[in-house]
Structure formats: C-alpha cells, structure tokens
Length: 489
Image (cartoon, rainbow, N blue to C red; front, side, top):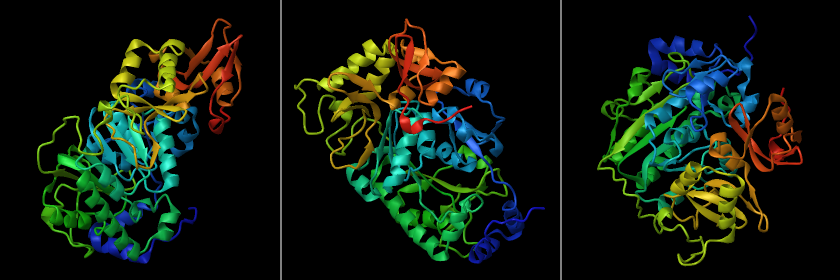
C-alpha cells in the first residue's frame, strides 16, 4: 500500500471529533483514508438533463439530493473540456449542492448570496431562477469577487449583479429587500481537510472561535435585508458545533422572530447535534431540523445547513424601500440622474438596433431581454440590468448585469458574455461549427465558411454557444477572447 503523504490532522481537532461522534469516530476517521468525491452540475440555463447526458463524454452518476448534480471520476478531467469553458456545467463538491436545494430558489424572486465566491451556489441559484428575478451575488475580497463575476459570465447568467461589499454596507442599501438570503459563511474549513492541505495548516481552535463570531455578525446583517416571511439559509463546510449549532442557537436567542424550517433534504442527512462535544452553547430545540452532512455517511466532503424563516407574510409587490425604488420604474434614468423625458442614450439605441437587425434576435428572445432587464450605458459599455435592482450609486459593483457589448464610435461590438447567454434558437445569425472548426476557433484562429455568410454570427458547438465570429469573404473572423484561448483535442 502506498504511503499516505497527506499532513496529519490537528490533534485538538481529532480530540474534539472523538468526543463529538463517540462510536462513529472510527468511521469518520476512516473516511480520510478514502478518495474524496468529485461532482459537477449541468447548467439548466443552457440545456435540459436528457440533452446534457447525451452530449457528455463522461461516465456520470446522479447526486441523490441535487436535481442537476452528478458524480464523475477524477481521471475524466471535465474541467479541461471545452464544454466546461462555455458553461455547460459547473464543477462543485457534491455535498455543497445541498445548500441551494434547501434554499429552493424560484423564478421571479429577489435573492442575495451574501458570501458568494467562487460562485458555485450563485450559479446553482441562478439556474433554478430560470432567468427571472434578481440575484445579487456578493463577495468582500476583490480578487475572489472577480472570479465570482467570471463564473457568472461563463454560465450565461443575465439576472445577476455582482458586488464587492461588506455585509454592513449592503444592509444599508437593501433594507427588507430580499425574499431569500443565502449565507454560506466563511468558516474554519474542516470539511476541506480531505482535499485541501492549506485548510489543515491554517486551522486552530482560536480560528474556530473567531469564525463563529464573524458568522454571527454576518447573519445579523442578513436579518436587516430579509423581508418578513422570507427565508434565510445558513451553511458552512466545517464540523465544529461552535460554528454550526452554536451560532444558530445564539442567533435564534437574539432574534426570536426566526424559526427553523424543515426541508425535504432531511431524508438524506443526519440531524444537527447539540452539546455532545462541549463546544458552543446551544439548546436542542433550537437546532431541530438543521442538517449535518458527514463524509462517513454520504458521498461528499461534509456540510452543515440550517434553514430559517422570518415571521410575517412575504409580499412580492415589486417595490422596495431601498434606494430610490426599483430599476423597473426608472428605465430611462441614468446613474447621474437622467430625467425620463430625455432621449435614450445613443449607445443603448445602437445596441438595440444591433441585436434586432444585425444579430437577428428573434422576437421572443428580444422580448425576454426587455421583460427581464433594463438597457443601461456605463461609459462605452452597455449592460442589461435586472429590472428589480436598485440604483447603483455608492455600491462597489463588479458586474451590474449582463454585459451586452461596447459602443465603438457608432459601431456596436457584442460581448462574449452576451454570446454565452444566447443559444442558436434565439438568433437568426448562428453557425454550428464542426469539430475541426471548433478546435480552430478555440485556439483563436479563423476558419473557412460559406461565402454567403455575412456579418456577426453566434458560433455553437453541439448546440452550446461558444462565442462570436464575424463572417465575410468565405472566412470566419475569430472573436473568442484572447485570455480564454486554449488547445483542445
């Protein structure tokens, strides 16, 4: 047997887990000698399950608790496949998929993912919203916020705004605004030990305590942003009671307006624990129906999930006390205070003409854009902002919606984000590439095409949108972003 070269687990962690698990401790420890689990989720914004499975060249096994989730074998390396690059699926640890299933997003809702990077739970949420409503995905660390934004783009999501703010700042902008809030809180990362040696090196009992205090603080900001009757889901990828049941018990004691909600997921997972390890103060009645995902009981690395409901009746009235009202009521207002009677900006009109006349969006596709978003200029750039979004003045925003393209001095150039949002059925100007053409395109090369083709084309690979090209004189000029170009076999 090959020697296990992984770093030893911290002794205080082991002692705590032994006290916490009792007879189960041996099984828990044995899980660390086994191979970790690998998962991916197909993107329902781009395909349905049946079509996805027909197109995928991998052997996949369903994840029981996640509608779009599958296990894969690591040697298959789906992260290197072109379908990953164009957003057909998202690679995500299987137990993490349960969190959004507990949140149960619905089309048309306003949802906040408060600690969203790198984007697994935000992209899963957006898929369940089916392009309707508003998703605000926030990440405090700038570098992680950029990665979050990139993943939102890759998955073809239109109705999401990506922010780079503190929870306190967001709470000031969004009082009683959201129907649902997800707090996948920064934690001590004990559920990462099997796959990330850094998590082991950074762990300490002191860090656990610091994380618990920070988690409670984040939850307190979420309280202010959730509507009466709204749903708050709290999750971590750690095992400590102090950060899980302890935090929830303290939260419920301070905010009795909240109560624990049952979920359909309880059939898959163990109930929350309380007091068996002596870590954290909690009451058994406070953690009833919270969920533990243990690596020795499921095919996953581990998670904790608590679903809470705020007392009151949820009202979806399309209005907000935040800012100056919803974007849907300010369609022709610019961020600087544009009056309604002023003309539509040239860049917006140029974009609309391009979409309908040059790109040939179908009436249905164009109507969907108009219904769900507001065309908004930001300098030379044009975005489709979700209609339910508040004014952006004062917010640190990485992505204010779907980037449609750029005004190039009276010539509009579409963005790669727009291409990933579209499908061949949505535009008359689309071209299905052969395998050889696709390989050339993804390397940044031009390729030959029918000399009858003219102008901008949405290029697809086995039905998935890959990017834009521009046809003329029998050649397809390449507009695949330089930073994404790779070699594919």
